[in-house]
Length: 291
Ligand code: AMP
Ligand code: FE
Ligand code: FE
Ligand code: ZN
Image (cartoon, rainbow, N blue to C red; front, side, top):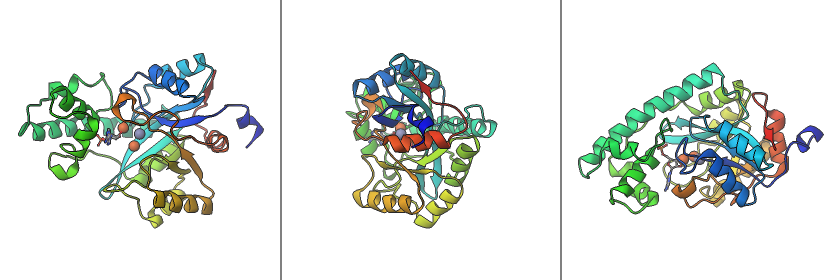
């Protein structure tokens, strides 16, 4: 760890949390307060495809004497897999990255409308139900449709919605536009950020990208993997740790907190001080904020 980075923050660190600027249920300031209450002292806000929560979250973190790393979880796609790329400390005004996040968010709206139209063939649900569950301008996703299904009394919670009506195999699912992971990594890296694959080894449909493709991402500037995440498989974590060691990559652990939208709690997984320092050292796009 370098002296400069060492003096910038103190752990415990949770580098993956969502607010209601995407599919979390709390405001950015509330997310920061929750993280603090769970013992976290360094956090990153990583809303899907959006950076509008940074100022509010950063202000609250500074007020509480915490360190704030601006971040994003960028939607990407490899073959049939949904791939999420975490980006940290990039320039939020980078034109290429802004154009891509605008495109993804715009397409997500039409896609959510299509999913609702499909569901409405069998259930009483319309687009206004979804809008009622969505903060204006939030990145719209299936979680908001899940909340609308809950409000209608069709399912009990988001988990039941994802296991049933919103699952791709059920037939209501529609895809949305997303760049391929090489593009996503390149966009974040060229904006001065640090790109880390979120939950890279979950089970099921989105399971791990092939190792040769991961190595292409590393060649493209990928900085690391989020290994300690509740949805990564045990065998997958082992494999990724080996790959990370082989390529001297950053490894992180985080909660993927979504407020009441998921059972994940802040700090259930954390990132070591050494790895946070490496992220800060590597980034050139924007600086962390410290209280
Ligand atoms: P989308 O990007 O619109 O396809 O929706 C995927 C998002 O839904 C992910 O970012 C997750 O945060 C969320 N999600 C996935 N599975 C669940 C679940 N079982 N319960 C709550 N949220 C979920
Ligand atoms: Fe999410
Ligand atoms: Fe994700
Ligand atoms: Zn996430």
